[in-house]
Image 1 (cartoon, rainbow, N blue to C red):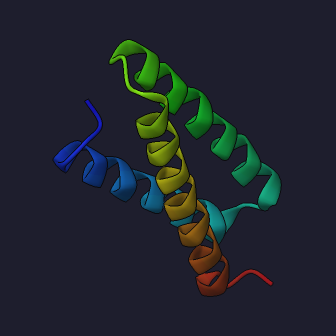
Image 2: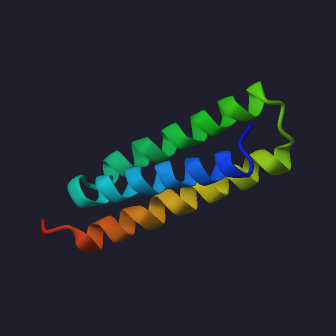
Length: 80
């Protein structure tokens, strides 16, 4: 179930992936990873029988964390 400590770990994983992608790749890779987060969240929500509100909340949080970390990775990147 994605809640409490599991949600924290999911956010940390999304942030780490976003940061690494931002430092290395362009936006097309980030779009593919965002799509993977959407599909993964929908799958977890279906498996654990989440309410629609909980699934959308988790999805928005994970995407926001991932994309924010991507922007930080872009700023830290030495590639220009």
